[in-house]
Image (cartoon, rainbow, N blue to C red; front, side, top):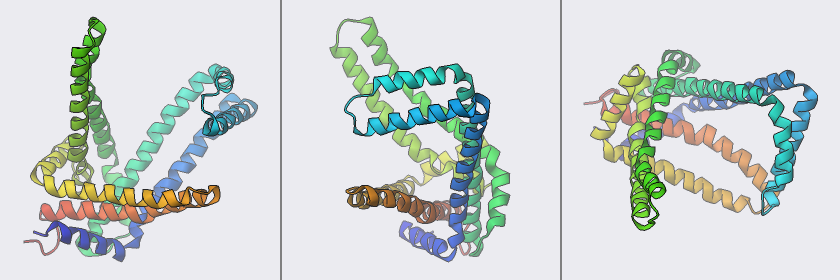
Length: 296
């Protein structure tokens, strides 16, 4: 069994030998932007281009003022509210279509990215055919698994209920606040543990071609069996995010350099960070499950 350092080094080597691993993330970003444009175009057709232009202008004004104002511009907010209200059903429908569509697109390409990383780990090379095959194969299962995981995160709200109920039922402040604080603490711990435990799910689901529930069970089981390894990879991802964030602070001192850095930061994430971390997680899962070549 490879040590975690070997998993990281070999995963990085797989990524360097297969720069095409960035393709799913780049195509995903482009596809989501194009889909969003199509949805916005549909909204413009539904409500009329004049109304759409007026609303877009009002939103732009609102965003410009918010950046520099100490208080929310209530005048612009009320004007925007009046403009949107007659078309609220159109905007709600568009928002639902946008969220579901972008989520399906992202799920397809994430499944494809893991499939490509699996092939690259197994045989040393991969291509877009692996993206398409695993994307089609696992998209729906991964989409359903992500919905189930989101519901699990929402269940954490139960930790906040006792304190909130007691605060409403009694005039006392001390005990309800203590219970609410303990609830918040338990909620944070729950979110952290669930985040760690659910991270391997998408890799288990795609690599082993499982259904949604089986993928969640296998991913959670993998976490319980390899808690330290999962924790270390998560810490490494946080360190990378902090490092790029610190670099960004230097560039945010000037508007032009800030704009350039935002673009560069997106490219770094799409072309380096996301494919590299996908290769790491894929190798970790396959190696610990005995699925890598030469595993003993």
